[in-house]
Image (tube, rainbow, N blue to C red; front, side, top):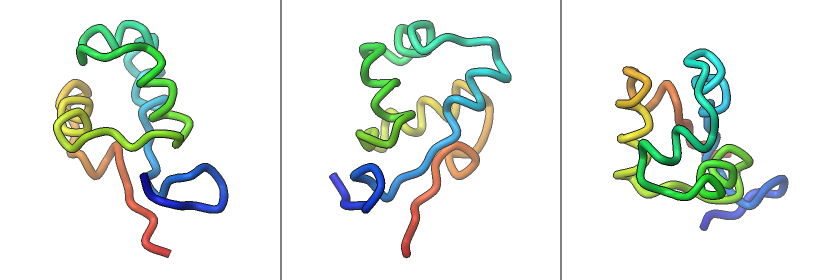
Amino acid sequence: MHENMENGTKMKNKIKVFRAMNNLTQDALAQEMGVARQTILAIEKGKYDPSLDLAFKIARRFGVNINDVFTYDES
């Protein structure tokens, strides 16, 4: 995991925004992705960086580019 002063990661995401736009719960997204709800929660809160495979699956689920969902803070 990468270090960040705020939440332990440099990876930022908009999963919560995309879930809201699609009226999707954490649990429903987790089931579709084949992970636990706690995994989605941890990713949303920036406490866990998803695997590249999971990141692409999440982006595909919302029909967007991976860069629309995930960004990397290089500062």
